Image (cartoon, rainbow, N blue to C red):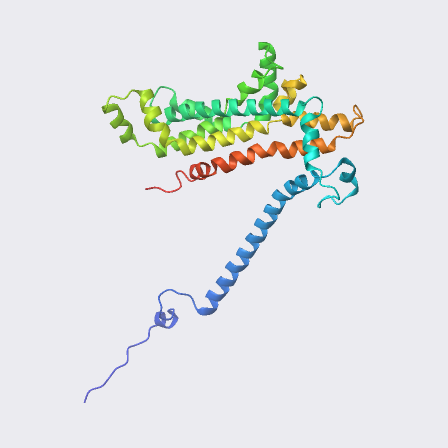
Length: 316
């Protein structure tokens, strides 16, 4: 006579989850999916508000640049007027005061391109040296660079003005170009990018083949640094193009103004009564034309800029 005994159920077995591993019960998974869905909806709503906050001023600027001076104050600010006067506003802007807008545009392009290209070249050389060479004081130099990132540029404007006044170069184009050549953030970015994207073994192979330091940099390392160079170039270009406070305190000659200072002075002389002729259409159209070159640069450098931002995010 055989007796069958059922396996004893332990208290732990009674409280164990159902078959299927550690998956939680269906109600818990449902609550979790609903929570994730609510979070996703909130994030999408926040993102939509940020996009609206960013694009609404551009939309307002584009719409009001098509209006005449009279319709700027009598029509809806978020819609077009009865007359489409964009081309007339562009002609008025570029011919106002003997074409002073074109002079400001030339100055802005000169300051931005010279400063951005020079700063990018300095950052590429400095970042490559800090990442790939050992020399006395390297850690101190890196500490100074990192510390300089935390100092806002506006805090250095007054000391820079006093220094340039001693040197006698205020109210000159060099007073804007020289500070634009200094970019601690760009140097930091290129240091990180060079350390990650330029293999030491590749540099050693170039040295074994007889390449000197300059040849190794220009023919080997610089090509690998191209995404980081494009990123730093774009950052410096935008920063110098939008720079306002430094040119405001450095320059007093209107023919040396960049667009930021020139358009603001043009708007101020109307509001203060120095010039009774309303030229708000010139200010608005000039502001719209001023952002076109930046948009073109973004579109042209976008693929390099995106790849530069992703550098170092994945370890291989």
